[in-house]
Image (cartoon, rainbow, N blue to C red; front, side):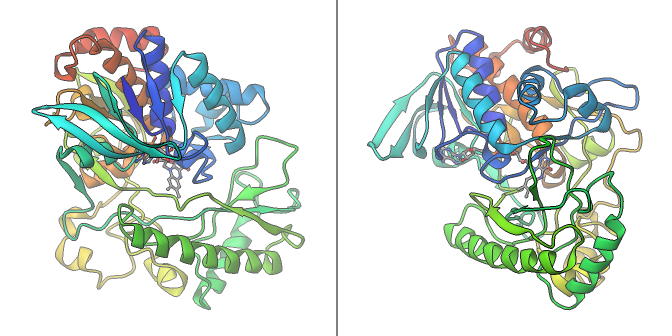
Length: 449
Ligand SMILES: Cc1cc2nc3c(=O)[nH]c(=O)nc-3n(C[C@H](O)[C@H](O)[C@H](O)COP(=O)(O)OP(=O)(O)OC[C@H]3O[C@@H](n4cnc5c(N)ncnc54)[C@H](O)[C@@H]3O)c2cc1C
């Protein structure tokens, strides 16, 4: 089987499939694994909080990766992280652990390989075309998992997908994450460390004067006590992440905005007087892109109702976090009064509030603070029998994707996709997987199902 894309979802899919005995190839366009966790420098695992009952929502390979990073001193230990509902980690450690786990599982790995095309016969995907320094070549497989985050394989193969909100097709804002080095960590406001209200007030004032940030972001303290650097989720960029012109504009604007914000931080924020912009992420972080049309679809109402399903293969607990596609920064972001597209938004003349109120969440989280289930059918293409997906392109509506896009569920759906694909290796038919048996194998492997 072939897994396209080595982000949090694809890593777990490849490891699960190879451990289950399937001959597995993982291909990734960059020279390292990790996707948004490493290329996007997003260093916090979310979507993992225990339900009010104390029940686990994610375990399995997710837990193994956290344990390995924690052993290096580079992630908050699993139990502590679950209790707090968030696990900060070091992206470089994620890369290292991902390499070790993927190769240790017996999967084959090809880096610097972009999936550029797909070859389809009837209702089966026969091969994908890989492009890289070695040229272009087709790779056949019996089963495929599209873990590209953008559903590139789905799109190239002609299977159905959707993108954006129904009202105008726009997707959530992207962000280019800057990392600041040279910090005095005793003084920089960090989560749980106090004094962030002051930084928030300073940032608000600067945004009103035109600073192109969308909010003050209070980072978690780095789990690696040797580090004097932190990343800040502060830029907001609009555009279509499947259009290279929009991506180019976002990268260029993101770097300029990050530089301006870094200069402001150095001049203004306590503990950042000797800081410098150490890096901007390798790529602009994409929150939302294509979503595959699957046999089943998770809806925003399922999220808010904490819907449980008999055919579940993963759980998720995270609210409807729709970063406004208009990507307001500066005074406009202050007017909006928050990150998420909500009915309480201060921009009362927005077309979403005046014409499409039914699409705008009144609130973000399920009232019972429980989890909702992701069914196996949401991972299986409605058009091609041997194509599955995981992570942020599973079959969901725009609102539900704003919840299940985070890394906890991305890794849980990755593990399920890999395990299920291995079960379908002989038949090449993902629609015939015995879901009860899949659930049993996932539980045996430590997953929370
Ligand atoms: C700015 C930002 C902040 C976020 N904050 C958080 C947070 O705090 N906590 C959290 O849990 N989640 C957060 N998220 C969400 C989360 O990081 C992602 O949704 C998650 O990484 C999705 O995992 P994935 O494996 O589905 O996709 P990705 O992480 O996007 O991985 C896809 C992989 O496929 C590769 N790829 C893409 N196209 C091709 C191709 N054609 N051929 C070969 N390889 C390809 C990519 O290089 C990448 O490695 C954030 C996202 C963004 C953008």
